[in-house]
Length: 304
Image 1 (cartoon, helix red, strand yellow):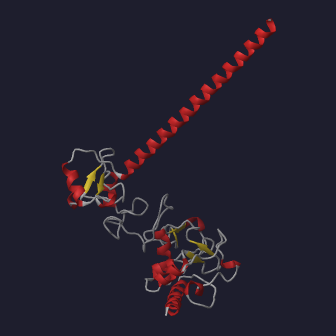
Image 2 (spheres, rainbow, N blue to C red; image 1 turned 60 degrees about the horizontal axis):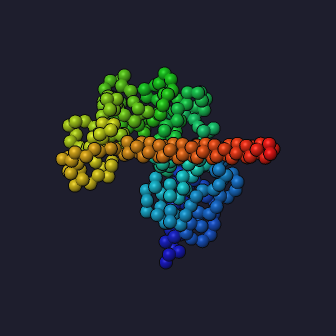
Image 3 (cartoon, one colour; image 1 turned 120 degrees about the vertical axis):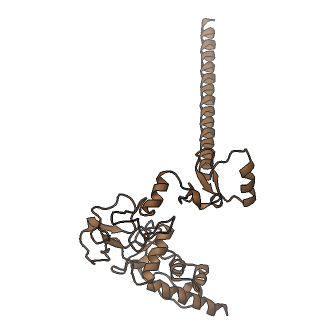
C-alpha cells in the first residue's frame, strides 16, 4: 500500500540524512511525518530558528536517489555540525546549490560537516592558525594554506577549491598546467590554458565556458557586445540557427537583451518622473495665478 511505500521512502531518506550528519526527531506514522520535527531547540537553524524543511514529495523522491540528491531532498539543505550539534540550513549559510550538494555528498562519504567555529584542517587536524585556514568553495572543508599541495604563501583573494574538488570547468583538467609553477585561475575554476582563452574574451557570456576555433561548436555572434554565444545557451533551435546564418537581422545575446530591457525601463521611469515634475510645475503656476488674481480682486474691491 501507499503507507508502506511512504515509510520505506522516509526510512531511506533518514538513513542517508543521518550519514550526512542530519538529525531529525522521531515520530510514528509514514510519509514525511516519519522524519518528524526537530527534537529540541538545539536542532533549530541557528540563523532563522526554523527546523529542517521536509515534504512528502521530497521524501518519496529521495528513496531511489543517490546519496547527494537524497540528502538534499531529505534534509532540504539541512546541515548539523558533527562536533557541537548545532544546525543550519544551507541557504542560511549562503551555500550555493552546488556547494550544498557537494558538502552533503562528502558528509555521506565519511567527511562529517562542521560549522565555522568547529572547523579544523582536514590534513593536520589542528584547530589553530585560523587566519590561515581556507574553506573550499565546493565541499566547505577547511585546509591550512601550508597544508595544501602545493602550499600557498597567502590566502587567495577570490574563490578557492581544495585538491579533491578543483577541476577546470571547461576542459575537465585535474591539473592547473605543466610544471610545479602552474596555478589555477579565475577562482580555481580554470586551468592556465583555458584561462588564456578566457582573458582574450573567447568564452560564451552565458555559460562562461571558453572555446577554441577548432571546437566546431554552433555559436552566434552578438552584434552589440561581439561575444560568441552557444546556440543551446540561448535556446536557439537548429532551424533558427540555420536561418540566422543567412539573415541580415541583428542578433543580441541574452545579456545585452537584458541590458537593453533595463535601459528601456530606466528611460520609461525617467520619462514618467519628468512628466510628474512638469505636471507639478504646471499645478504650481496655476495656483500662483489664482493667488495673484485673488489679490488683484481684493485690491480692486478695496479701491472702490
